[in-house]
Structure formats: structure tokens, C-alpha cells
Image 1 (tube, rainbow, N blue to C red):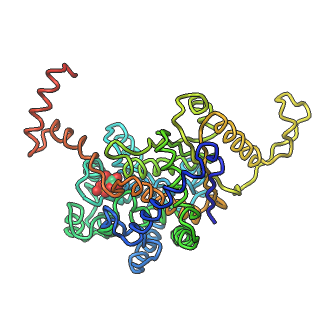
Image 2: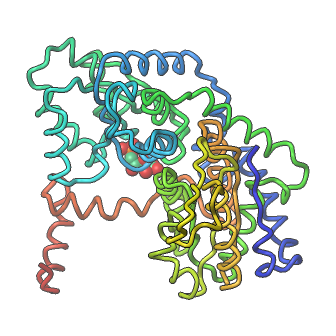
Length: 453
Ligand code: PA5
């Protein structure tokens, strides 16, 4: 069961400060659960652990099984909410050196990602890697019009599918998109491609428990039932506790909101397991795109510990006193490595002889939290049993709920992202996309005046 702890924020928040926020939390919970909040059309993620669309889940499993048997590589093409969740779960739960294992050490296809940036060199190298291999593409885009995945799919299709028969193309391209709209829906209909639906009421960054995340995750051999069980278990846990401030997601939302209001402008999410690096990327998008609007919200920063203690540790300990920190941890390692005996003690580590590595990591975690708190950085922790699909499901639902509640307490619509359009409109204008002529002229004037190169 997931545990949330905020003991190490006590020096930074007085008890009476919870009085005012508890009322705001109660209202936020009611608005979210009764779906009367701003953006309520996008609260379908609350129900995803119910597995209402059983027929689609079975198709996801069957498609994943087929891909596991037939292909060498699955290329997941998507950006933002259409890729981060799948990548986070796959990296969190796969062998650390998956890409380097030999064929008999691993099972199922390798999963690679594309369409999450516009690098020419990245696509060139990917094509080089994939040529001559058995490749499938899962193209994921709710709008079906996002530039990065559309460009990647066009390039990869041209390079790798030009000579394949219509039958193979049909087997190798799987589309995850809107029920009715968009270019991908039209392509799927034209070629009779297998498609999965992103529900209308689920936005991109809340979509990891739909086929957006489930298909790539299942293709990687991860148990999606266990993932959904974890999300359902956390949802039920949160529903059970009586006091709003005793519910883990509610309390996390309340504490972080209080801290942000007191001037702690940057939240650090960290973990002492390197495979969780992409999970912090998923979390960064969740909070960055949901909560940072109208000049409000905390800057989300992801760290890998202890690695980043040797790069950002100084800044966290003694830099601007604007940080608060949330640490994800797991109670058990999958495999325990013990520090061996070495009587020469040249490395001065003999005092650790026979100590499990997990104990060393745990002490690093505790020592760091104590040091950071002493240095003025409030600390919270989220602990799960072990790094498993179940725990990832719990964490996803915990953070999605906490993020939504944080936004609502701050009177921010959690489910839109108006600011994302600004770069797109400039990029389209500069690229000469029809319909953007006026903006292009404005930008050209601006560039000339400021001598921007
Ligand atoms: O959270 C979001 O809505 C965004 O991050 C989108 O997922 C991202 O922009 C990709 O959009 P689409 O799935 O329409 O290609």
C-alpha cells in the first residue's frame, strides 16, 4: 500500500495553517469527484481503473501478444502525454541494460521512441538501426495533427514501409487516436489499420492508463492488469480515509499548496532508483502543464539520487531557499547485492562489509533528507512496497489526483494547456504553413528589428 509522509515539513508549516487549506481541499475534492470542476469534461481518467471497456483491453492484450511474437522493434511515435507515460513505466520496470541484453536473455521486441522531438540526426540513426528488422509502429496522437509525431511517422514510413505489401503495412502500423476525428483516424480507415481509442474525456497527460500507455507497456511484457490493479487500489485507499487531510493525495496536494503559497517556488521530485528517471519526466509534464498557468504553480524539477547529489546537491543544500522536495522510494529491492569483505580495507569500506546495498541507499536517502531539511528544504516522501507494475499504478493515480486537487485549490483548470500553442504558431509561421502569413510577417519584422539570427 502506498504511504505518504510529510513529517519533514513540520518545521516549515504551522498546524493552524492547515485550518484554512482543509476547507479548500474539501471543496476541491467535491468538485473533482462530482465532476463540477473547471475542465470537468476531462475527468474520465478518474474511472480508468474500472476497466469499463473490457473489449478494448482484451484487444490491447492480444495485439501486444502478437507484436511480441512477430517483431523485433516497436517504435512508439508520440509526444507529451502521448509518450511519456508509456516510456516511464517501461523504463521503470525493465532490465536496466535491456538494450544490451542478447536475444536469449530477453523476450519480446525492443521498444524505441520517436516523434518526441524534431532532431534529424535522431531519425537518421533510428532508420539505420531499424533497416532490415521486423518493425511495427504504434502512432499515438489524440489530435492526430501534432507536428513532431506526424513528421516522424512520415519519414519512418517513407524509409521503412515504402516497399512493404499492404498486408504487412496493415499488420505493422497500429494507431491510437481519437474515436472519430483527425488525420490518423482517416489513415486507419483508409488502410483498415488496427486502432485503439483515446477516450474523449481523457486528456493527453492523464492518458497513460488508456491504450496510449497500455499497448506499448503490454508489448514490453509488463502486466497491465497489475498496473490497473495498483491504480484501483490507490483510488479505493484514497476513498476510504475519513478526513480529507488524512487522504494521501489530498494531504500531498494541501502541503505542497501551502509550501508554494509560502514562496517555495520549485518542487523537486526525486528517487534513489535510476530506472525512475522517466517517471520524474512524466511527473514534470503532469504538474508543469496542469498547474503552471496564469503566472502560478511550482516549477517541477526531476532528480536522480544519489547521482544528482554530485551535481545539483550543492544547489539544493545551499542555493536559493525556494525548493521543496518529494522523494519516491520502494521498501524492497528485487535483488539484494551485499558489499563484500575485503580485509585489506584499502577503500576504507570494511565497516560496510556484509551490508546490503539497499541499506546503504536507504541511509543515503535518510541522511540527505535530514541534511536538506536542516538546510531549509521541506521534505515529503511517497513509499511503495517494491518497484512493480502495481506500485506504478498506485503512483500514477496518486500523482494525477494530487495534481488535479492542487490545481483546483489554486483555482486553475488542471486539464487545459493554452500556453503550449504559442511555440506552435510561431513555428508554423516560420515554416510557411498556409494560414499563418500574418504571424510570419510580424515575426519577420520582430527578427529584423532586433537583429536576431
Ligand atoms: O497533455 C497533453 O494534452 C499534451 O501533452 C499532449 O499529449 C501532447 O501535446 C500530444 O498531443 P497529441 O496526442 O494530440 O498528439
